Length: 201
Ligand code: GRF
Image 1 (cartoon, helix red, strand yellow):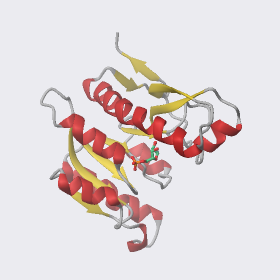
Image 2 (cartoon, protein in one colour):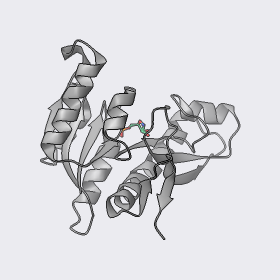
Image 3 (cartoon, helix red, strand yellow):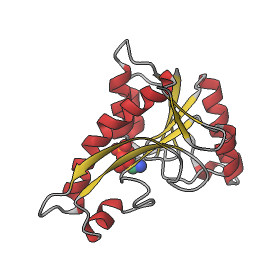
């Protein structure tokens, strides 16, 4: 399965997917990395893996629709059938999500449905959570709301700061995302017509 990865920044989850995809028995190949930020560090990282990259800046387009149309075209041209969001910091419109329905997945740094949105580590600490973690889910129109594919739990330790907690969660993300992408690529899970995750037994 060919995959396009959308990033906006560091790209450490993207790199974790690329590491996994180096193994010959991994069911997905990264065909293209697209960033909406031309200065994203992840673009250089992708280049060092010899993966094709495209910077498609929002500012180069008149509106969101034409920006997303350019992204869709680039994905199609790469032959990718799946789209992985990996720190892509822009909300995708309903029409883009509809176009790629059931074929876009995202990683989010919390155990959804707790803490959708930004600042999850700070909010988990403020709420007194003793367990935190990360989630890979199919992308639907509601932000961080789509059906859950896989989750990993991480303990909250005494004295944790948002930084120390986020570093522990990020390690879990780097293990979880390749596993979840492999599940989708192998057809072990898919998004059903009613927007629920259907797991093959
Ligand atoms: C990760 O924590 C991811 O869960 C969130 O944004 C961060 C991206 O980090 N969506 P990176 O760009 O993958 O290093």
